Amino acid sequence: MKFARRVEQLPPYLFVEISRKIAEKRAKGEKVISFAIGDPDIPTPSNIVKRLCQAAHDPKNHRYPETDGLPELRRVIADWYRKRFEVSLDPDKEVLPLIGSKEGIGHAALCFLDPGDVALVPDPGYPVYSIGTMLVGGQPYYMPLLEQNDFLPDLDGVPFDVVRRAKVMWINYPNNPTGAVAEPEFFEKAIHFAKKHGLAILHDGPYSDVTYDDYKPISFLQIPGARDVGIEFHSCSKTYNMTGWRIGMAVGNAEMINALMRVKSNLDSGVFQAVQYAAIEALTGPQNCIAEHNAIYQRRRDKLVAVLNDLGLSFRPPRAGLYIWARVPEGYTSVSFTSRLLDETAVAVTPGTGYGPNGEGYVRLSLTLPDADLEEGVARLKAWRESSRATPVKQTKRS
Ligand SMILES: *Cc1c(COP(=O)(O)O)cnc(C)c1O
Image (cartoon, rainbow, N blue to C red; front, side):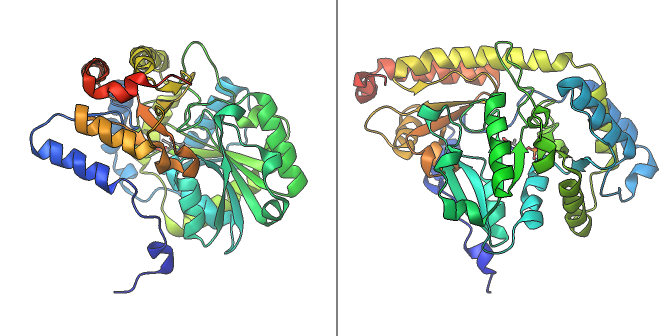
């Protein structure tokens, strides 16, 4: 059988070896503690589940939904943006529900890129930006997110011949995987850059409400001029622990929203209406679940921070998002550190290279594992630190 080149060119799955080791350990009955999964472990709040159940019983929700979603949902999304960010949106032209934001992020490539066009993507970054680009024959240009630049891309550092061929720039703050956040000045700079070079900005912001220490991220759309050049992807997944439900949204520039809607209307048939009603409940119902979940993640973050410091990993405690992005000790690569940790402690983390070439030297630890597992993971790391086996790690000075 012959497959399309776009499929054959998909990058190989990087962590075959590590996944194999995890599977082997589990097959032997060993308990692997995984900090590698970025998917909230806390259940969806019960008012939302209840609303889904009600809506699922109504036969009118059993039929094809409209691609652009229920008008009521679009209105609720616009209201939520007004309340949360003081951004006003036209619910009929500037709001589009998605089957999870990943769906819209993937399809966006079809709207903006012809074969050979360049998309500027963050490196490290959420893999869908670059893979979506490659699937339509475009070329990702990896903008390094370096610690010394606070994990913000250096826009002036993008070579001129690349900028000339670029159609879009992806940005994502609060950032996965680095945990970095962006201040308004960065967004202003990005908008100026996009206007100067005729680019569209695609901002991905699913972690705007997963925050710690009273930090409150802004929306890209709060910045003057944002709507002239860009859209923002958001989602119920991380805010309301609804990753499995598949519902997100794109908001902003009406022409860009319309292009995405036209592509989608030819490829999918929208979001199950019962899930749309559940999203309405999520966005309009009690919001105290957000602070409650964040308090849980923050406690987990603080426990993990203490032991990682002891292990000689250097990192900045995140103010938002679900991850700690940590530099591995001297003498290790992302993969060699991950492998050794797994072999000796049965604790799994994600090697940074899974998020792009500039992820080398880092690992990502997720906060989305149950407290008891997290405690056990922390205890294993402590024991590892104290055992002679961890000596090379112990000797490493923190940078
Ligand atoms: C989790 C995540 C998403 C995807 O969310 P869905 O709405 O569940 O598809 C998008 N972008 C980033 C950076 C994420 O981490």
